[in-house]
Image 1 (cartoon, helix red, strand yellow):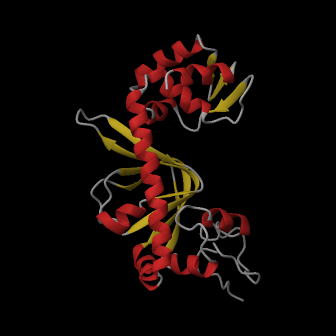
Image 2 (image 1 turned 135 degrees about the vertical axis):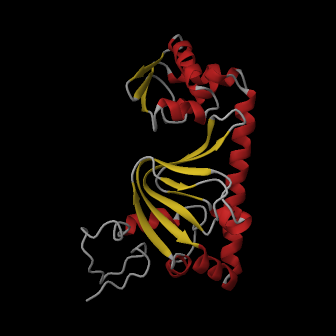
Image 3 (image 1 turned 90 degrees about the vertical axis):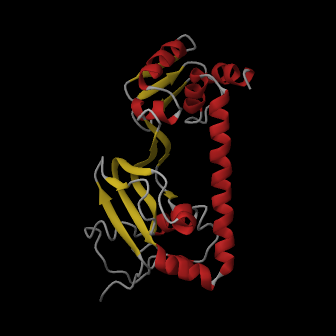
Amino acid sequence: MTCPCRTLCLVPKPECTKAQSQLPRHRAAGPMLAKQVMALPLFDGLEHEILERLMADSTALTLERRSLLFSAGAVADCFYIVLDGQVKLSALTPDGRESIVEVFTPVSSFGEAAMLSMGVFPLHAEVIEDATIIRVGRRAFVATLRSDPVVGYRMLAGMCRWHQRLSSEIRHLKEIPPWQRVAEFLLALTDTRQGQAVVALPFNKEILASRVGIRRESLSRVLARLRDMGVRTEGNSVRIDDVASLRQRCDLLQ
């Protein structure tokens, strides 16, 4: 019997017979992943049947580090969902430096606004950690939106929330010193409120520097200053001796 799942098994059927070895196409199988994908701002609250219709033109991609998904100015006939790995969106500054705008980790989506409104991607997208990605084609997606306006309203609300968050983050980064940018980034990686915490860096220091809007060489100086505040880098991890104290230092500058 052939597998009845129409869309990468994102909405798996009980009678699905595909073997787990059939990767990457069947990698999305499983109720947990379906739940995660449906929790994306775009899909939050949608029924399985609508999700299948939206993703009828979807394909799964397994990409190695440094793979280029698209360049700025490329035709935006799709958007992407990150299932595994990491993808960065970046732009070039006037002096030729790369500026990382966003890093996407599982499970997150990007490119929706470009596909639905601009028609071209305004940024570069590159895989920075071996990734499994779903490419969601425009044709079936737009056809579903046209047939069910409520779905479109929900997705518009999700994109507005993302734009608000991004705008707020950009304004905040411009207003605070580099050491505080790094400190706040590290604090956001832990739920600890008191005492010591060890956090794993989600990407390398070059990407971290660009993510908080500073040069790579400046990051070394910032980390040296943070050592005086009880923040120590240990390989790919960072140890914060006193989380509450570091939060207080950041809060005093708000």
